[in-house]
Length: 243
Image (cartoon, rainbow, N blue to C red):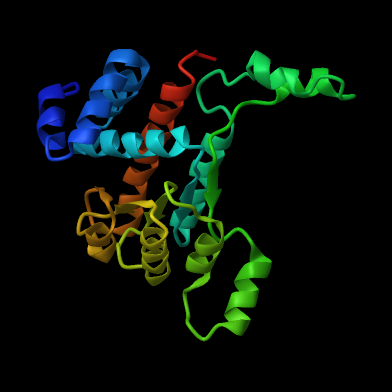
């Protein structure tokens, strides 16, 4: 079964801004809808997530149109997923991200301009919280509140209009929940990627992506194609040209 556009429109009806943007994207960037269609066809048990992925794509478009950043966090395998997502966004994933003429012109006169402009790619700003070991150890040593590392990292780096994607299969990881609260205080959009129950994260986040199941390894197996679809959709919006 393919993409049910009526069901998507019905589900997005309570979110008129997202519905309008989704319809505009479908009309102007058919490549985005093609990615979502492929996701639903290849992963039919995850087809119910299609409207949610549209909302996530809308949130990221608004963020990137303002020059914002996607922040990510998680623990263990979910931390690895956070780094993975950032890697897919910072350079080409499936599409051509060659520099524009205007971008190339800024390198004029530099000694390695030709090599750099031929090989650099346009990126989408993404940052996985927790990558600084000096910060992590300083916080562990100096701060009496446990699990505040992601929150401190985000409080220093986040700006209004940015997006935080917190990943927790249980939905109850304390450090992720702290980060979400900081994001809300900063005026950011919050997205939670969880398992079936959703936990506290799904209730707290602006958008909840709830994969089926409660067993961690199975939830993570469904997170993988889901976030690949998100990366492919947002890339198709900004960089529609095939590689």
